[in-house]
Image (cartoon, rainbow over the protein chains, first blue to last red):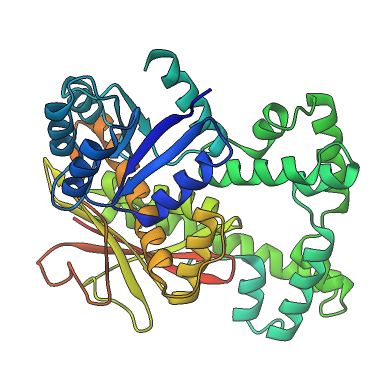
Length: 123
Length: 281
């Protein structure tokens, strides 16, 4: 069975490292990791991943702007916001902007993989 | 005098030498096991599962007992037994000093009574200091979250010692990992850390060894600040504030000191490491 192709976008190298480690030996394949929203949009257009894990608070192009540019390329893109911020406002803004789900940092490998598996039920 | 650990109090009073304290702490390390270590020693938890529980403990809000029940599949009855074993073997610092011959039992009891009095006063003073801050709820929320997450990331005892108001400048030998929270108001939160402490925090966060002052270490500590800031925004939403964090940053300068902000410095002891948590409101 083909693996789910995942792209991560976070300005924090630490978070990208953690997610890459969590995805190892799982049914998910990390196909791209970007630290910048602009680069992420270009990379999305090339890779067309099944799931995009997108940080909300990034320097330059924010997570919400990046989300809207990705959706402009593919309105069916499956984008999940990953953020330390869990306010109702933030969650509402992300979901109404087209994000499919929201994951609050920090998280463990088990929580993360469970979350990803739940996503695959609806992706 | 601020809130502190008993061993540190004895040292500050000249009741024991530094060598005696190190000796007693090493004695404690040999005998005092965490609940997870007791479970491994007892054979009801394998080391791999124990490592998973400790990682989960560091990175979530769950308690150790709760994780042992859920993740380690240990029954409540077994957990109670493990707690009893842990308590029976546990040596407090005073007992370790007596066992090492550095103090007599009577001396420890005398110092302990005085220490409790000092701690009570220190706690009263801390609460009064919080109340005296500009925007006490915000300051308290950020400081408490910082203490909570530092405990997780350093996997050891963390204690808030004292609060002070100052200009917000960076102390010598420290570097600042900070984040601006914007929205209804503008707040900065920051961790001012010496490099070795930053390395401990970074390693605790990522779970792999990192080099002092490496990009990965700096980035990881920034992400820790991001978690503290993000969670502060979430918690302060209940107080009616709409805040969101900007990307965290690292600086060897004083930013945002000198911007006519009220600055509060919380002096935190993480094991034997000193950390300054700063809030600019």
